[in-house]
Length: 203
Image 1 (cartoon, helix red, strand yellow):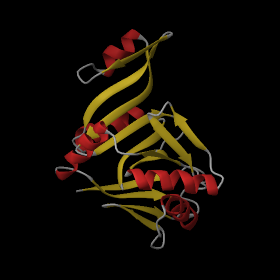
Image 2: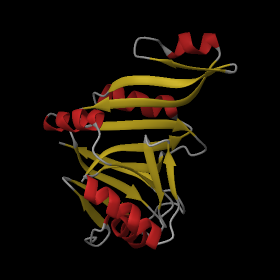
Image 3: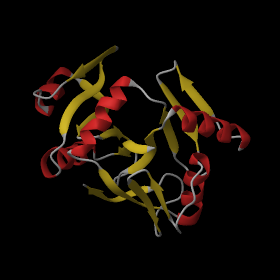
Image 4: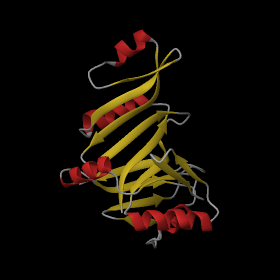
């Protein structure tokens, strides 16, 4: 069980993207969006100035380093908020997670067998994956760079931690949940609904 991905929403996409690319050394996988009615994607090497001239409207920016994949999506909040966490599971844990979600009467969305989302009672979702070849390749890169801790501000840290742990069959340690080698820690003083990104520790 491992956290490999998180998806953030902010109205400061370019600034947040620049932080990951510059300060944190991530690489740009691609910027995905549309020009008029046509869906399109651009890899690293195309500047924002060039994209602006084409009329490109961003849907999301995808960044990656080691075993950490981060997506930044335009939204209403200045400080980034968490839409969902991506969790890699083995076959048994994946099946058990889906079963627990059903028992808890939580919404499960399957996107064509490629991605499965599980709602939580904490204002965010989980993107859960059984073993997949592309995911195994990504996790292998964790020897070089991986997520150690993710700190999120929330209105009710205890509730958020319990909601996350319950679905994954884990036991929270206060307001922190250990998921494989990473810890997701909820801090007080945050907004209602989606928790707000406070800090990351990479190893």
